[in-house]
Length: 155
Image (tube, rainbow, N blue to C red; front, top):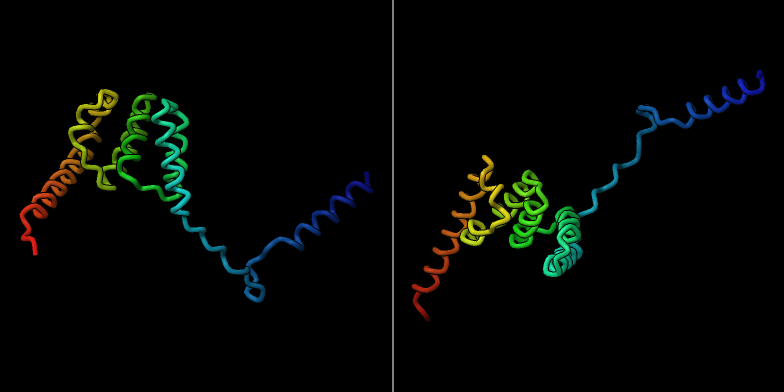
């Protein structure tokens, strides 16, 4: 028993000796820099999620949309589709998050969003109004930009 206590005491002292302290004479090294998202990887993941969506593999597509989002994917249509998939799986809260992201990224297909049957339950949620308002503003902005281009004089 005495031997066991001696071994434990030595291990405790060793742990204390190697534990970091806030000693100003021995400052810690620099903090590691955050790794920036890889835009090419996020686009690849988004495209792969789109293919899975077309193949009807909704859960797999949503998984990749989540991963792509974490890597910096911000394509409005992909974000919208992730919202539709989340709604189909019954996750209204996640659907609202994705649709809000799509609206913030510039999604402007208001009629598509309003006619999508998978979003019926989402449209009943209180958060829907902000999303619809933002998508309406995006659609109006796109419409105005198209009109400005059409009426601009040709040189």
